[in-house]
Image 1 (spheres, rainbow over the protein chains, first blue to last red):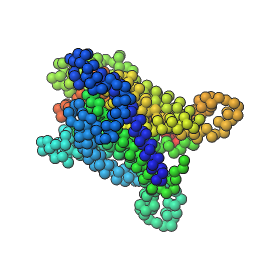
Image 2: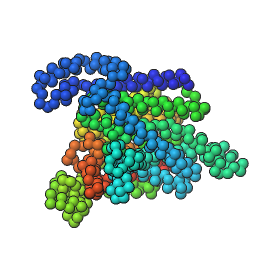
Image 3: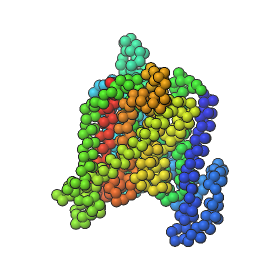
Image 4: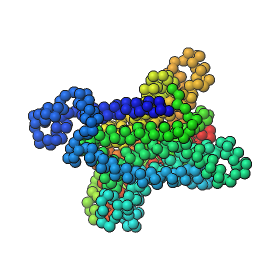
Length: 314
Length: 289
């Protein structure tokens, strides 16, 4: 297992390298752009060329990439053009906001998904199963911005119970906690359906196993059969899927953050990409891939710990 | 990203070879089909329907932009007829989404067949590459690429095709790995058929059930993606009637004129529900043979 982890870490490093290189080349292929962006539309072509030279942007892209990676490894992520602060600073600030949102959403999503997934899967084909599956399917069919608009209309505009925006600073009479409710709700509704379906399928598989029949036939109460025997086994397979949701919750919530004007990582990346804030885009992409690879690795390792039958061969 | 019906299609690969022959739908499937058919008809008929042009603004209607006899669903902030923009928007999404998904399916299926049939180094490289693409949060990839190269219909189709292809690739590869061990494949090999013939004539038709189900799912999620891009302001450039863009333009006004944002949201939600219902309906048939 340790060998497996080391192998995966190596693979992770390789992926990071490939992705960072791809993003760097993509962004800096036309070096004139950076100087043009800095100087504005009225600068002459000469000025642009001069600055390009001064910044060393006229050198081959690979040379600059190696230099950039050297900087990154020493902790220097560069300066953000739009925010006029070090990239690391703004990135950390927004990332921690998103982590807050993600943590709350995760804490809401997982127990509910387990509950509904198990309720649906313990009696395949029952009314209960069908209703849960239909509801889950329906909810995950709604785009996040649509759910956001619907919920904002109901809770912010008509009922006036919750704020429609979440700038994370005390605005009006709304506390910060109340600003988190709608974004978390939208994320939970959109994301939960997938997990419910996943846990349901796994539960159905477990309920068909002989040991469940044995437990039932020896006179065990149904409740105990489910809680003591089925549940544990039913959660092994979806474990990786559950962890992978972290990936979505942190890096995939651009839309939710935009709907509620939440100062998070996703919206920062959108702003950076739109204003061609290249240093920020590159660092953000690295962070996103790092999160993705870490959750994947954690998922794989956790899966192996949970299920001793899995042996990695190769 | 997330796909509910896709999960169930992982299990019964064996049963599909039999079930793939019948594409009869269940009730849910018919409801989905009806929704899609309604949108497709509206989209096709858009030019002949007695509607104002989608980009024509009726400034007089701005005095009261809510639904009226002249504008059944009201007008937006520029006085453009919402019903007309929704119907023309259906035309946009029903063109872009199927082309993008078709591209992803062709690329994914061809590579998946190839990797699953030949295995070895090609398979390893392709599978690693698809893992990398899948591990990257796609929305961030969309933002980087579309802001860099501009948000034209072609670019949107291209990025969606590239990011969805690995999903189809995985499915087709897994099925090919299983189907290549069948007797009829061995028989074809004995006859001396070429690898290409075996992949396309022997294996692909037997894998088509789950592929069709997955295509329906991808259509739904692609619709969501196109909507999200429009909403984020990196979708099709205005004034193209685009549902996500319509929500973006009017979202700030929901406290005054909620209908402007709600109506396109209902439109896009119903279309995605339609695609997903077809997938659910098909899958039930595919599974139970």
